[in-house]
Length: 375
Image (cartoon, rainbow, N blue to C red):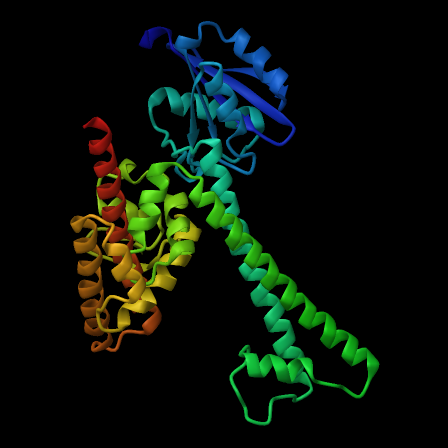
């Protein structure tokens, strides 16, 4: 079958798809360009021959996984490729859709491409919901910045110099009366925008709670298990679970750390070893929540009330991993602090190790559920 397999590369855009095929020892050839429509894709599949002898790939991008789902539903073996890991010739200065499709087909036949994990439509829908909440938090932060800077320009601050965004501070802001009506209109709109973003986040939180309650057993179990970690509440746990997808696809913790983009960059040659800042080439959503959670490990290890209640329903292995994370990361924080390392670098190092503990809990939970089903 390997000799008869046809390797098809697709360069997918919003309106068009460039198609190329590599077969046997023949030269890679272009099959032209089709419309990015379901009926056009079905016609293409009908022209490719036996579906058992066809393998299709395309790069991950803004078009999402709709094409992957369509192809797999009709029995075509399809893989979505990581764009950053596609081999490129340094001297190649010509880029067209046809050449991109041919390069994909050629590299796919040679086995030089790296596929990404593709979620099902339900998992992708939950991930979209979590990312939409993250975007709403960013919008809220920008709205707060606009309000704070507006007050700063006029030198307005409460008499007691209280902390901003508290209930007392909001009471003072809402009672402000400026000398010009234009100023009062601007202030009111800025306040309403902050309120609007807060209401959006509340709606997203409620929707996430409902989605988790209706999620498959494995996802709910992983979300509960991840909350045993310090600094990981429900929204963070859902973010980790949806962004990782399947924890078992990683063979070791080092791969997980690379996936988050928090490993040091390196440019070494001969006797010289040069390491720089973190690569930031991985999943930025994971990197953000891991760094936020890592700040909690500067405090002494202890279990809060929420964690104590959760641990009664979790396996002893998960509890042991979570407690080990607290002890190790706390020691690591203060060891680096005593070396006068910058706080940002210390927390990044902790977040990198925290990713390993998250992976360990995810793998343990998936394995326990698999064993329970088999029994």
